[in-house]
Image: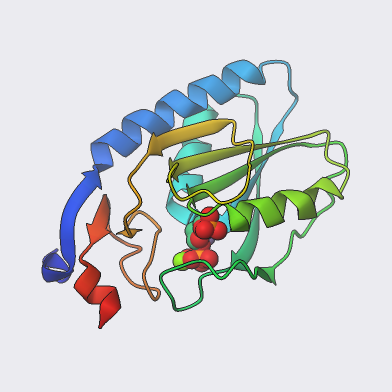
Length: 186
Ligand code: PRP
Ligand code: MN
Ligand code: MG
């Protein structure tokens, strides 16, 4: 589509690159969990919705059976930088005691959302908790985090698309793209 053409500076990760990387990550996770009866994927809404859907299908080709759970948290609200204050908009529906949990994120930026979420989940008796994220901004991370599976390290620029939004827009784009600063500075 051309609706957003004027808002996008450039594409940094294409749909094709996402597809190939998702397949690669799924193979790694499947190999590392070849002995598991099942994996419990916890997708972090809303940003992770696209990656969760594609990653789950990729795991379906290689891995043990998966179950899908979702949490919805928000730390950015309408702004373009993380507040560090995480709100739970939707909690887990089910008990995760004894489960092998893989948290599925679209992006680790400051790391504040994930840091908070991992502490929250740690108290719930999972057998293990690991993280897979499609994107990470290594230069923006403000807290030490153990993220086991990372798709792409990207520069510290504001990106949208493939689930990632600015003020709830641009999530439906197929690629990950850098937003023109003018869009969030106005
Ligand atoms: C975004 C993104 C990650 C988080 C990363 O979510 O989807 O969850 O921020 O930022 P951080 O590492 O600096 O905490 P957001 O709070 O915008 O909610 P959304 O997923 O509903 O867009
Ligand atoms: Mn998010
Ligand atoms: Mg957001």
